[in-house]
Amino acid sequence: MAAKLVVQDLQKRLGDQEVLRGASFTFEQGKIYGLIGRNGAGKTTFFNCLNEDLPRDGGSFHLVDDDGNLRPVTADDMGYVLSTPVVPEFLTAREFLQFFLEINRDRIPYPKAPDVYLDYMCIDEADRGKLLKDFSHGMKNKMQMLVNIMADPTVLLLDEPLTSFDVVVADEMKALLDVETPKQLDNVETVITGSVRELCAAAAQACRQLGYEPTVLTDRLCCQAKEAGSFLASIAKSHEDSDHALAFLAGGETVVQLTGSGLGGRNQELALAAAPGIAGMKDTVVFSLGSDGTDGPTDAAGGIVDGNTMQRLSDAGLSVHQVLADNDAYHALKAVDGLLVTGPTGTNVNDVSVVLIKR
Picture 1: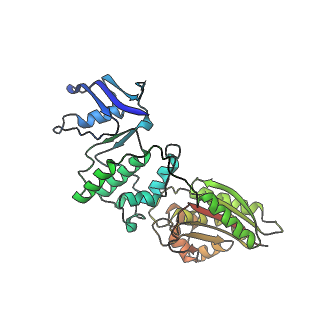
Picture 2: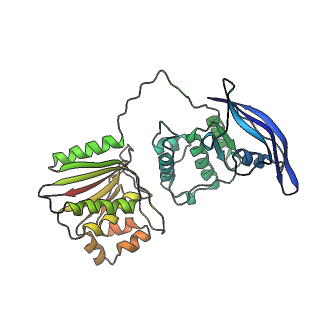
Picture 3: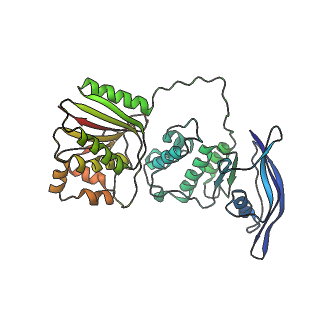
């Protein structure tokens, strides 16, 4: 456990200007420090050198644990909240947090559902399905600060973090930063009451009760939605000649590569992408839905297609290839009665995608 960050004789020149000259300080763990100085005094340059965004001209910095052992600062040790927030503007708040959790699963040992984190930041329910490009500067800053707090770095650098917040939000952020994350809890018993694995198992049992022979393909589906849809269609095609009813299930969360400006969600895109592969197949459906009843910034939980969907889309003058390029699965599925609308379910354990072959 690192006890302190030690900076020794840090030096940096920008052109002919000496910005940092012998900057030295010891930052103790569990404390919040403020750097005060005029504009251009070198505060941001100091942060950029610590984060290794800028090469330093001299000096060093390292972490020291409680036993006095030194070790270098790694990328995982450092969190940096920029004065101008940088967020993926074509993801929703929920999608951004889910993506961040996925790529940092090794750094966040006990992840929570995205909505739990959004509750921390007092992000309104109505805003959670909006694209981040439609967020205000202050709201983007809240999202940037949130993912850094989620990562729980050893050192968190905050470059003018509160200037874009109103008085109330600034006070909330100060209180949040002042709370140290517990590293160990000895008086807690953890009971897992729901997970994507449990979701898949429950869905498989429901299929079994309906007369299908279920197979859970994975509970870690994490590719692009279009690829997952095509893959599930190929599974259906491979078992087209089966003489008994089959169900294939996949749990997890896919991602959508945005190439257009349409409306939809990953589950709707997955389902629509499966339509060409099962075109003309009898008694076969592919559907996908979010366990929370929400898929992207829409009122649908997901989508469903069958062997006749391609013909119905063609009759409606719609090209699946163009719709997917526009990321407009919502309107296409709505035109062929292919939306799944459940309303909020009150839970969130990722998504489930299913192939059903009835016999």
